[in-house]
Length: 288
Ligand code: DHB
Ligand code: FE
Image (cartoon, rainbow, N blue to C red):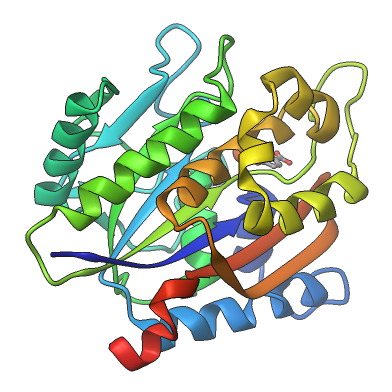
């Protein structure tokens, strides 16, 4: 059966993509941010996952406010990077894992999650940026990708506890998939930011640092928090952070934190990263 070898969490701020495109990686503003991802890049190089399940939200590029699924799963051969208005980006399309996607959708339905099924869909910075942060700029992505879209934009958004439960179902799907492929799950979004309204520009580094600690050690408390509490602590768009709970729900209760990094502000956002392994798994490198 397929194997889950790790859980990654990261922000997906679009200005990170712009910084890469403009060659700003080593400028004083950006270098401390990008340097923090080097251990994460080393981790994926060493552990060589075959498939990345990426949990993210679309930002009005493939879904608009008129039609928003609460949960959607990509079931396509390929996902093209969306041009978000700055012109086409020099990144390759993402190769799908269609057979697993259908298995995942089936497992979800059997577990009473009923997602929208997307056989053709483009993907925005919510997936582009995390892929570049961990895998750099390859000519072709070395992993297949399974996108899971979560509505954290158009109210009512799902409960954090529901995201956590979805993670458990994802784990079940991976471990019942007849394949020897190695999976990683990426939770993306956050950390604190608010891009509109009276609190535009709000960041909360104290809450962000607590989240980076608790996502490893106390996910049940984060899953039990209300949506309103996410908005209060992390900002209206920082509520994206609940998508990390899908990743966390796929992992064991006891995890090892391999790497973590926090930087503020990236654009108007508290930006964070984490690399988790299941404690019971030991060092995935030996098992490779
Ligand atoms: C911004 C957009 C995002 O989707 C996000 O997660 C963080 C920041 C932005 O436009 O600055
Ligand atoms: Fe976002």
